[in-house]
Length: 416
Image (cartoon, rainbow, N blue to C red; front, side):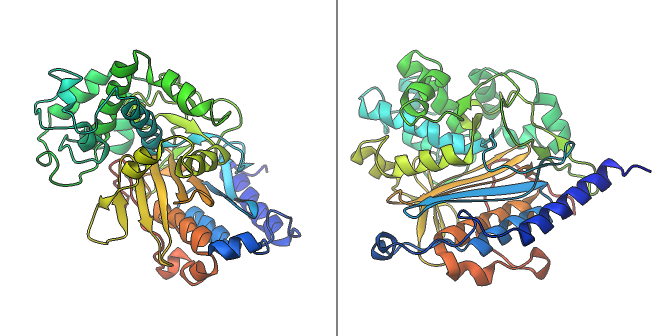
């Protein structure tokens, strides 16, 4: 009797684990020697065992596959576990493209801050001065949008109140920016402008509208000419409203709310519900290049980069902060990293760099609506940027270990 598809998948995963355990260390797998440059700079050497363990914890928590790419002065390290396609049983590939969700917000922020530097937009001007009558409160400024302090409700809370039915209702739908803003304005505002941080995708939908109003071009063109082409990001694209992820890619799998229900392949979708808040596609190498270039000052003037990295707390832990479309995480070893997390149906992403841009990590798991997998994936930050100091934290999720903080950009309702 031929094995079932589930049996073939389990066998494939087992063989992958055995091969990884028995294969001799390659240059990418072996722990790199610490160069004098790294030692002088006080940079940590990534703990590759801890990095791999974080990925294994992620698949143990329900992701079909996970991968990470770390770049620094001593070179590049990649790790991958599990599968990128459950149907074909294809192994996860660190070169694969995927949907990066709200990491897109940092791309949008770079474009907008370039426009600020060009005197086409002012951070402290009312949004309504550029988009008359759009918002019900003239006090809401551009800065409020970029710091999630506008008080505009996140329309995705209602849109995805039921995870899979909500997704299927919008999978192939094409929205206009105005449509999404109207959905937000139908909900009560969450806070007065500037008073408190409250994450909302609506903010960056309006950022997209500001970009298009100031330039006369679609967001896709501004991404391309201001970021993709200058940095030679050949595997990064904004294809809204096309649904396919072209070339080598990881398929995304959405966990239903119901315990034990089968995963839903969510790879093909318009992501029109997010647009400038979350519709970019990229790869680990391109994300390393992007976050490193950003923090090195290759995309923004010193003044704009300082503004972007000026952060305020997002909760009471004093480890999570938000600037202008940019997160800061303070890790257990005292290192601070800047970047963004991403959640879109079927994918979790972390893309972060040190403040000097010399070390960068991009990590992805091809699942969502599975908070424990997202938290486990966050452990790659500690392993990469804290090195051997993180090893003790990389325990099996079954033993109750808690690693780097997880934040999600969409409502999550996990089966219990």
